[in-house]
Every structure is written in structure tokens, then in C-alpha cells.
Image 1 (tube, rainbow, N blue to C red):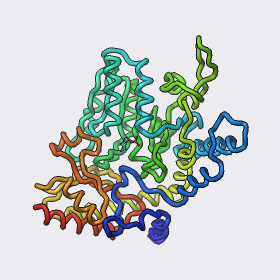
Image 2: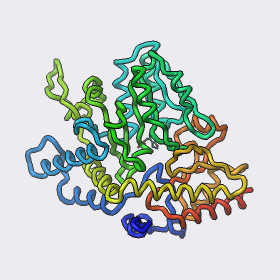
Image 3: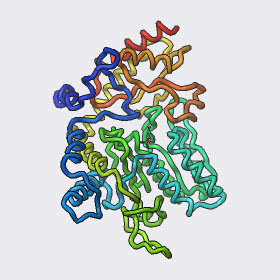
Image 4: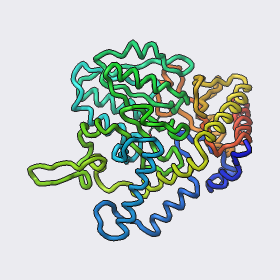
Length: 406
Ligand code: PMP
């Protein structure tokens, strides 16, 4: 694609020119954390050099500038995800915080015998808070099963949906397998059954520009650090009606209307859920990260990453004994694999010696590993700044590891 200038894009990421163990870095751990372009780094530096201040409370110029930039970032997030109202965007420290906020709030709405559905391919952060919620309320956690390809068995999902189900939790894209779930069908069916839906969008957001009004999920969560932004900041999208009903998660400054020792009233949305000094710089940088990704375009990003996925899948499968977990028809650029007779950790260690960063282990999704009866996988996850040449390096590295370890 002539319009997609990979060389120009790569120059935006200073980290891509460093060396690891004397070799040029090949960064294939993008599903864990993406790298940061200079445009976003500049915004972070500019914040601390020029207008670092606490927000919302100050009358002085720096505080106003910081407040304006932070609220502008909220609007950028709102527009990016086509969210109806800016106060439906809650800044959080990331997906984990966002999910815990909702799970905590639902304690007041669930009773013994209610049911909560989670998919079989969730990240631990979308399992554990719901288990804690079920422990508190007596609600029952049930699992939407998946097949060997790593796709949810939708027939079973539809069977599980009864009037007892109050909530459904599912990721849009699986971090361990790359499966893109049929999220619209999941949401619509849950709503017909009278259940609310939280979609964990942590792995989808770097690849798919999700439209909140079209999707109609009740909640959607994102971490900025997976989409060219910094760590420690993310978004909880919630429908206004839900956010108004949910009790606050944390008490503190910023989230109140009035405080006396007898009684406190809470601030309006979104501040009700934003107690304490937020990650001001992080929020502003999150907005800059969205600007950066949109300047390349999510269509172009998806097309390029799909090409990388196909190329890498073909080349890796040429290696005898290599098995890919997660062969769903719709996938993002994630390849989870093992070589028969070799521990994933050993492959990861040898690849690191070659400057290639992959993830090994259970990827915070132990139930998936149990399903396949494996201790873990090697996961290579590609971003729009990776190249086919780098994939060739990975394939050579895996071949070398196999020879050394078998
Ligand atoms: N859900 C999914 C699908 C993820 O991939 C991750 C990050 N690995 C999380 C949730 C948790 O995100 P964070 O650590 O940024 O809170």
C-alpha cells in the first residue's frame, strides 16, 4: 500500500531504534503494552514543562490550562468512540480499575440466585472482580463456553440467557487468542433477556474503532497504554442511566457536591466516579494518542495488521511441530503458539537473546490454558509499526530455538 508509509511511521517511535542484547529491537509484545510515538511523548514533556497543576479546583492560570486540556481529552475520547455525552466518559487508571468500579457498584443491584455470565476467554481482570461480586451478593457465575478454534459457542450463550441473568461480561477481543467476539450479537441478545453488558475493550481499542452508540453496550473499558498512550490511564464508558444509578466506587475530593460530618452529597457525572487527583498528564496524553492513531487511520491500521497476521501465520505454520492456539475466522494480529515438546518460556528466553520481545505464559487467562491443557503459550502480537522483515526474524528465531531445545 503506497499510502501506508511504514518507514515514516517507524520514525515516530524512538524506542524502535534501540538495541537489545546487541540486536535491533523487534517488539512483538504489543498486546501487553504498545509503544509510544514522539508526538505523545512531546505532549507529556510539554505538560510538565509548561502547565503541570492540579485541576478543577484552581483559579490560577496553570490550573485552568491543565483543566482545559484534560477536559479537551475527554471530548477527544468521546468523539473517538462516538459516545453520546462527554460525562459518559469516566477517566480511570485503566481497564482493571474500570471493571472493578462497575463490579463494585453492582453489589447493590444483585441478589442471591441472580446469574452473571462471563465468557470462557476472559482476562483475569474480567473474571476476578465478578467472582468477588458473586461472593458478596450470592449471585452465581456461569461461563459461556468456547470451541477449539477459540470462538464462543453462541448457541450455548443463547441457551444460558434466562431471566435470572442480570449481567454479561465479555471481551471484544481476546488478549490470549486474538479472537474478535461477535459482540453486537452478544449485546443485543443480553438486552432482549433483560441483562446489562460490560464489554472489555482493552484489546479491541488498538485495532477497532468501536462506536458506542451503534454497539449499545452498557459499559465499555479501554486502557490507553495499549493504544500508544501512557500507562495508568484509561476509560470507562457507561450509559448515563447506569452511571447515575451506580454508587460511587471511591470517596474523596473531587467527587462530592457538599460534605458535612452528617451527610455528603455526590458530584454530578463524571466527577462522582473520579475521586482524588487524577492522572492529569496521562489523560491529556491519552487524547494525543487517539489523535496520533486517527492521523494514520484505523482502516489503514487494520488492513496493514491483517497483512502481517496472515504473513506470520503462514510462515510460522511452515515450522514442523508448531501449533497455533486461536484460529478464529475473525482475529486481530495476535498469534499464540507452542512447539511440541518445548516449554514456551524457553522459546521466549532465546528470542530475547535475539532482541525479539514476545510474551510467554498464561497471559492472565489461565482458564484458556486449562481448556487447551497447556501451561502457556508464546504470544507474538503485532502492531501497525511492525514489518514483515521483523516477522522473518521471528520465524528464524523460533526455528533456531527449536533446534537448540529439541
Ligand atoms: N482485559 C484484557 C483483554 C487485557 O488484555 C488487559 C491487559 N492485558 C486487561 C483487561 C487489563 O488491562 P490493564 O492492565 O491495563 O488494567
